[in-house]
Amino acid sequence: MKEKLLARAILPIYRSTRGQATLSGLTSSSEEYEAARPYSQIPSPRGYPIIGNMLEFTNKENVKNFTEYHGGMKKNLGNIYKFKMPGPDILFICDPEDARKLLSQDGAVPFSNVFEPFELMRKGPLKDLVSEVGLMGQGEDWSKFRQAVQQDLMRPASALFYIDELSDVMDEVIAKFEERLNAKREISGLQSIMNEFALEAVGIMFIGTKLGVLQGTEEGQRMIKSAQRVFELFIMLLAIPQIILPYTSVWKESVEHSRIMAKIVIKNVSAAIEKDKQDGSLAGTVLEKLIAKCGKDSDVPVIMSMDALGAGIETTGNQGTLLLYHLAANPEKQEKLSQEIREIIGSGGKMTAETLSQMRYLKACMTESQRIAPVATGTARKTKVDMVLGGYQIPKNTLVMRHGALNSVDPKYFHNPDQFIPERWIRGSAEYNKVDAFANLPFGHGPRACIGQRFARMELYMLAFKTIQKYKLEYHGSPIKIDYTGLGHADRDVNIKFIQR
Ligand code: HEM
Image 1 (cartoon, rainbow, N blue to C red):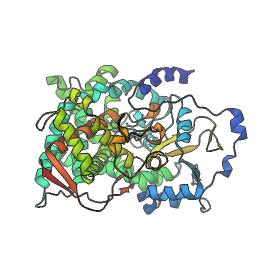
Image 2 (image 1 turned 135 degrees about the vertical axis):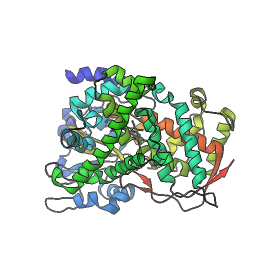
Image 3 (image 1 turned 120 degrees about the vertical axis):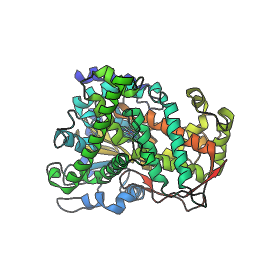
Image 4 (image 1 turned 180 degrees about the horizontal axis):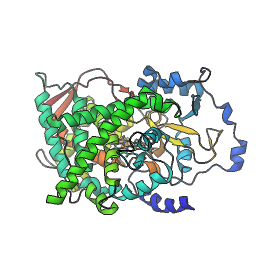
């Protein structure tokens, strides 16, 4: 009953989110379940006693070359396979049809197992700083929190509110590009500038403050370093059984970095709230709306800011580097974007909500870049009911990982999958690709989909717009690959040439 009420509250909101895949109420009937092959028959690579496939799952090279490695598994074992682990098995699914089935049987309160270690941290060693588990929680804790923040974050106007401030942050980024350009007009360390951009952007949106990291503040650098380290350790947090996790060095280091991040957020949110009392500087911001909705004494706004800064730096920063790379490496497509900018905004104009709404090619470039190089490899869930996937019985409480990064470059779903073709997202174009939405879900799906997606898109649109308005980008190196250590990122420094237009 409680789930039904929550479904009524949350489902209409996520259904209205642009670009979401639709579900047709797919569920496995008990006859289908009985007729399916037993779970025990799902193929698995040969493993060791007790630890099973843990060494393969956490092997640095396998993690780094995630798509090649799991592409090989798919070839050898099929569209569904499991890794035996010291704790529960991890099931991998490669067929978008199975992703559709998995996510349609998720209910209003999906269980995202990847956040479990962070929930443990907040309930344990970070309890003195964080009174609620926020979006890292599960069940009712998660659901109540998500309901409190959902509308303010997912409505289109929430990210558009920051369009001018993001434009100003991009001016600082461009100043930094200029400062870093060498005699060949190339920049070394583009990735770190993109992370600084993402932190400044998420900072103004969620903590009402610029941390000044583009200007070199130490606090901002600490925040980026800690967020990066937590993502790097993440695979071990998932692999080590929870019962021994608190005694491991991986856990201790993750807690230490999470504590650093939490303290910086608390300090800055508190300062922003104090300042607002004097000058009303939070007017119209997400933070102000959350304070108004949840009350002055609520911890929801601070914890939401913590989740946003934890999840919103490297994701958008890495995706931003890859977007600039794709534009630089595809001069014809870049030229089409430049032409769209000239036609709709001009060579010196500013982006507005109205002009952005007309920029179909800009949006298509971003979607295409994310298709080829998604920074998140997929979606993780713990199944809420017994279901059939890939013809096998999958009992309730199984950990399942959807291989999004394999689907979005599979020729079965995308023609010439390795080529950057923004036109495939533009209706009416000869190359328009009618896509199975479950083959490309870079922000996840459903009630637990990325709550920062509107902000991330807005940041990436602003990044590509301002950069291409000012520069012609060139890339002359060998193709960049994605390294999935931590979050997906370019496998080396991306040496782009920035030529003034
Ligand atoms: C290109 C940038 C980004 C990508 C690719 C991305 C991707 C994702 C994905 C795949 C998920 C899991 C969805 C699922 O399980 O269905 C997620 C969750 C989440 N993301 Fe993002 N994200 C990005 C940027 C951001 C930003 C800027 C924020 C800041 C608010 C953010 C905050 C979150 C949070 C808090 C969650 C957990 C939501 C929940 O479980 O309720 N993300 N993101």
